[in-house]
Image 1 (tube, each protein chain N blue to C red):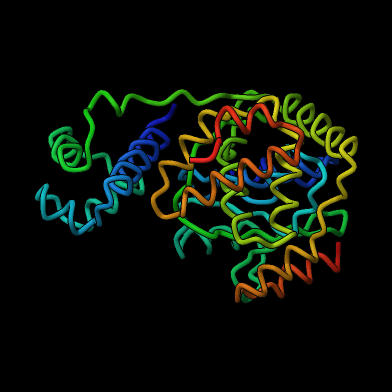
Image 2: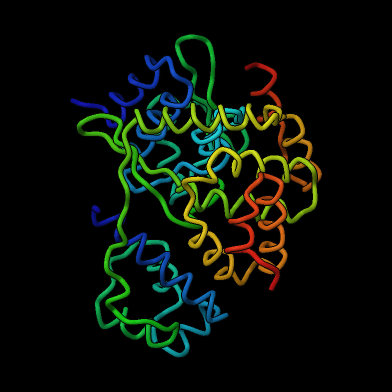
Length: 126
Length: 200
């Protein structure tokens, strides 16, 4: 895994731990002494934090440095991608499920207050 | 001088398969932005079901105003809204949106060529997302989740899905667990439903 991806994975893990502990960034900042802005950048994988900083954050949100070992990331080929898609389509068809209705999806988004004008245009012109 | 992302954009332009051309497009954006980005949403769902017609390509990752300008310089077109548009030579277009900066869940890499990889949200994280969406009790969200589960039930790490749902404090997890049970039963996967999503 390259360094950027490792930082993202680390940040995501810390954010998840913080959320599970039901702590805000301000809570963690107060208890760890790490600035909120720096915490936010760590969670977004934008900085490479010092080990001492990670330890202080983990002390608050729960966990150990060993938890930050790079998680395994699977690599798949394009052949696998296409095989999965074909197998999935076959199962959906055999189950008698209709093809996903994009208009119904856009209606739902619109009811939720999301502007879908571009997507409607994309749909009509596809 | 090599223009960043140009080779990947050319591969997207020349790729006849609709899914693979989107993957090449995301790979091009990854190169131009120069930070990890992840394909999520309906275009990712379509990789597993083949029965989803995405209306746009959702990508999460940190994409700055400067990145957006770089994408426009590379040939993407501003639509005046949230999307950028890429026009393929065959006359079709792809609308790309950046709905967030962080990936909710895990990802895998797709090896597009010897030297090019791009990141896609895993099927497990997609399933969690669709189950949570289906708790809104709309028929369309239920159907979307059901379609994905039917297409992938035999290869999903259901223990991981259940753990992910339980670990999301921002969602009413009991409702998500019940919905997962209901969806799996509807998909003919009662055994998985009982094993991982039995009533709490």
